Length: 379
Image (cartoon, rainbow, N blue to C red; front, top):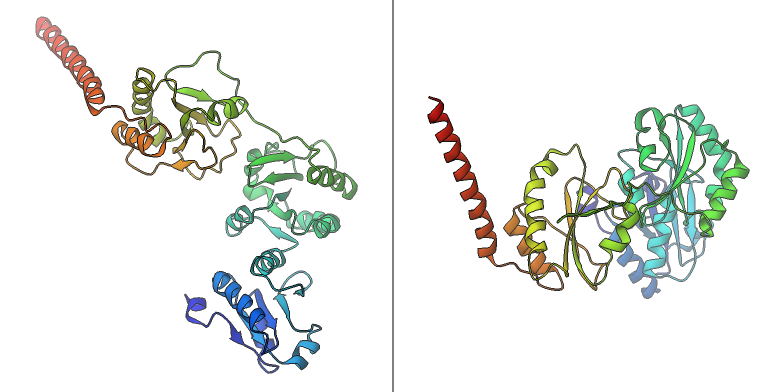
C-alpha cells in the first residue's frame, strides 16, 4: 500500500541517491537523458508493472551516472546482497528490463522457505535445492557451488533449504527424507523432479556435471508412480505412468480429481464422484467424456496442485487450457461444469440424475421399511 501511494518512479539526485538505495532490499534507478522520451516511457511502463515489487527511481544527471559507472540510458539495480548491484545497458525494452529485474533481484543462492517459495515457483525457471541440516553446512555448500550458480544465473535459480525444518519436502522431489545433505532440481513449469544421487558426494565437479547435463536435456526426470491398474471402473484411475495417455487424450473431455487419501473433503466427495462416473459411463457421451481421479501424493503429475481435492477439466483439442472447478461439489454442478467447459457440451438431462437419485431414494426407503418390519417382528 505504501509503494502504491508513492509515484511509480521517483526522481533521485546526488543528495538523495544513497538514501534511496536503502529504501528496500532491491531498488532500480534509471539514468536517462531528459530528452530521451522513448527510454523514459519504457522505464515508466516497467515501473507501473512492477511497482509492487521494487521502488523505482530515475536521474537525468550525467555526472551522477558517471559517478555510478554507467552512461545513459542505463538501469542499475541496487541490492543489499551478493555483488551489491547489477547493470542493464542494452536497448531499452519492457520485457528485457523486466527479465533483468527479476533475474538480478533473485539472490545467487537464496533461501527456500515459506516466505520465498511462491516467488521461486512463479519465477518460471528451474529451481535447484541444496538441502542441509545446519546453517554452517548450507553456507559451506553454497560457497562450494557458487561458480555453478553464477554460470547458470537466469537459467536456474539456486536455493538452500533447512533440512531439519523442511526435510519432508525432499520427498516431493523424490529424494530420501533421512539422508542429507542432498541436491535436486525441480522444473517448476512442468513440475518435473531431477534428484541427484544421494549416495554420491556433493562436490563442485559432480554437481557441475549434473547441472550441465540437465541444461543440455540429458537427464531424465524422476517419476513417482503407482502401478497402472489392470482394470478400470466408471471412474478411471490415473497414475503417473498413464497420465498422458488418459488425461492428454485429445479426443476426450477429461475431468480429473487430484486427491489425497487423508483428505476429509476428498472422502466426502468420493460417493458423488462415483455417481458422476456411473452416469457418464451409461450416457451417450461414454466415449467422449472421462471421469478420472489421481492420488497426487503417490504420483508425479505435471500440474501444480495447491490443495485437495482439486478438480480440473481438460477439454478435447485444448489440453493446454485446463479449467479448474470452483463450484459446489454436487453431481448436478459437476455435470453443468463439464457441459459448459468441455468440447462436447456433454450435458446429461437433469431427469436422468433425478431418476438415479429417485431410484436410490426408493431403494433406501424399501431397505428402511424392511428393517422396520424386521424390528417389528422381533418385538
